[in-house]
Amino acid sequence: MSDHRIFADYHTHTYYSHGHGSPRENVLAAIDRGLEAVAVSEHGPGHFTFGVRGKKLDRLNGELTELRKEFSGRIDVLRGLELNVTGFGKSDCPENRDDYDVIIIGYHKSVPPFNRHALGIWGESLLGIKNDPHRNAEGILAAAYACRANIISHPNLYLKVDIPYMAECCRELGILLEVNSARVTLSKEELIAIRGSGCGLVIGSDAHTPSRVGDFALASAAVEEAGVWSAVRNARPV
Image (cartoon, rainbow, N blue to C red; front, top):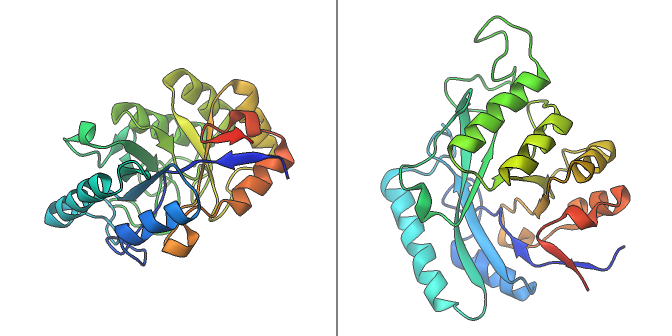
């Protein structure tokens, strides 16, 4: 294994959505694993099942603000949000987008008006056209641009996209593509193409329990096999 250290985990969940454990427990786990920064990035309000909205989202953000103060000097506690694509170029981006340190966006199931079976954002159920990876990439990119996203989460999960095209656009927009360590959704060839485009990668745990915060094993193995550590923006040589 290459000698690289991942210093931040921008993609973690808690009991505020469909995870287990509290924001405090995620922060303590991140400190225990030697991380310099951790974000709690719950699903945005557009997710029918797991979306965090209204007063519940306000409570989460207030808790993260207090944790940031409490752990200042030990770790950077970041306020994140994992937005849901809700249409071509659309998402559940909040009006106070600038209040968030990390905005992640991705395609998820159970986001109205889409069905649960991932037939495609612009598949037969909506427009009567065949699902198209290039068109899917265009729609997700338009949504990411509109909300000024920092990261596109788990590309290819639930919905196939044109990775080389997405990488070229993300390089121009300054958006990172995630290598998700809960389930790697990018092939070796796609990882190599992303690095070749000049687009940056970010490794995220997508932890749903405190015990998985900072668990980058699957993603690190994929990055190592593809030889693309130089593209990973939250890692540095040691």
